Amino acid sequence: MVLPHLRGRWRLLFGMVLANRPWLLIPGLKSALVASLATGAVATVNSTVWLLAGSLSWWRLVVATVASITLVVAWLVIDGELWDRPDDESPQARERSRLYNTSTLLTLTSGVLMGYFALYVVNLAWAYFILDPDLMGGYLNKTLGYRDLFVLAWFVASAATVGGGLGSGLETDEAIRAAAYSKREEDRRDRLAHDRDSR
Image 1 (tube, rainbow, N blue to C red):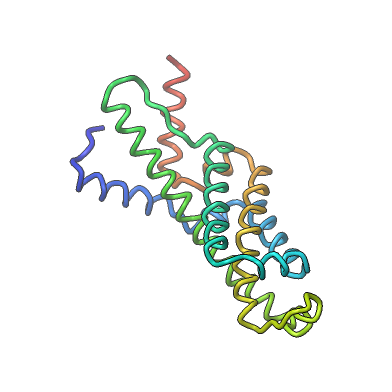
Image 2 (cartoon, one colour; image 1 turned 30 degrees about the horizontal axis):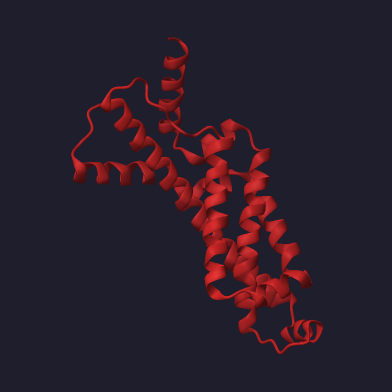
């Protein structure tokens, strides 16, 4: 495979990520989805989580978001054995592996980000449905309003994302690859792995 020049590579990379359909990553990992929803539901009604969410500044919430997404992406790459290695030491093989690995990271990051925002919306709706800010405030001895539920949902989304990452450990490597890659990409990687093993 001859790789195009820089502008063409960006288009190729974008096409590879779209072909992998990152929006189907989380629905394709059933155990991760169940674990993240369960973690979010339990964390939302936990008074310790209320206290933690209320004590965090915005930049710590941002760090928690980035850390949770990074941890899940790294875990999926490692657990699903998604990292591509060059066939040989040639510059073309190394460049090809860089392209495949970049597309994998972008696919997983996009998919986990979409899952994160979906969790935020679900947890916010859940919090609005079951929590009364006055009751929470009385329990924590501070004045709270409905605006505080946005912060709570943000913190819970980070915790639920990590919970989903742990839940993905129950998935097989094949299930993780099927969720991360399109059928065509999965077949191509299987052929490459088979070629390497037969050498």
